[in-house]
Image 1 (cartoon, rainbow, N blue to C red):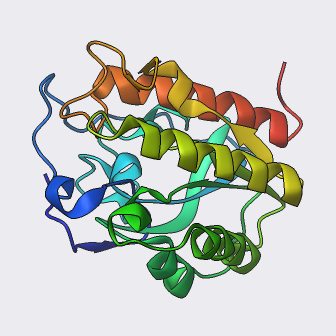
Image 2: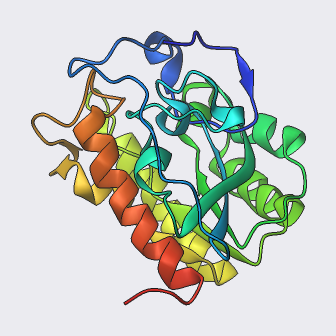
Length: 221
């Protein structure tokens, strides 16, 4: 798996210094082929950390690993067109690095790395606002972060703040982590290490995000 600190166009989520190093998936992981997007596909941009990049060999080029939720959210009707990510990135780093994108929907899944550095919660929320303003997609989907099995209450508190932010900004909210959560921790079989999802976990998260992306773009059922 790509080590922390590797710069990418798009990415996923790590947390706390003692958990920041990625590890190989217990269920294999690896790359997968996603369908070519059709004409008129929803243009998706994603900003996140290792949860989003996961085992992708070249996220920026669209070579997605199966442990990335994006792999399970894109397809003929949803095309990944841009974004930014870096292993271990804080929301401040994301806000400083993102650029405008020609996207219909922006998905942000971020914030856990701020916790390990003691970033004030107000700064995290302000950085997420800045990310959305810079990318300037037509619609924004803000996602809950997955559980942190060693400190579950921390992720729960962050998600409450993120949901309130989405409501205040008029964004779409998705508790994508509900698909892999049992109480405040990962459900059995959905995590590699208590931080990162397995391939099955990524599939469940991606399906939830995909449903809200389709809804945000007016194509939900």
